[in-house]
Picture (cartoon, rainbow, N blue to C red):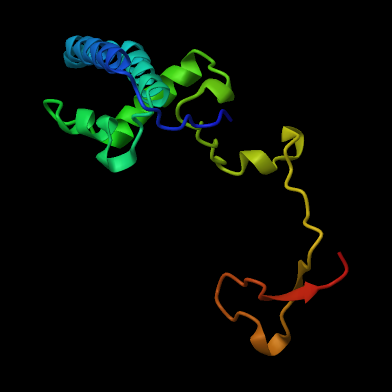
Length: 160
């Protein structure tokens, strides 16, 4: 992952250039935002460029920074989670390498045990620590319900 640039002292010319670039990006966004349903990729590209701009000029300051102010001042305001979703959507669609991503890719969650299927090639590997084993419960602990379940107890084993 690329190192975050330190906030640098800008010359008046650089500050003017930075403000002009930001104003252009804001204007592009404002033209595109009303049509966002039809142009998610376009909106994502612009937001990605805005995040890159903030990093380039050292203006990525968290909750009090220019990004949050920009999101709050849209009509209607744009939730940060939505903006981040657009950026991630564009990054993934364009297959941006991780080192050039402005937002980390989200891990893919396991769906319906798909990662643990024998043919998936992604079986969970046993840890080298203690292993839990299952043994049938003693008769006095057995389940006496109508569906005749078998009770079990977990034991910890130290052979790993």
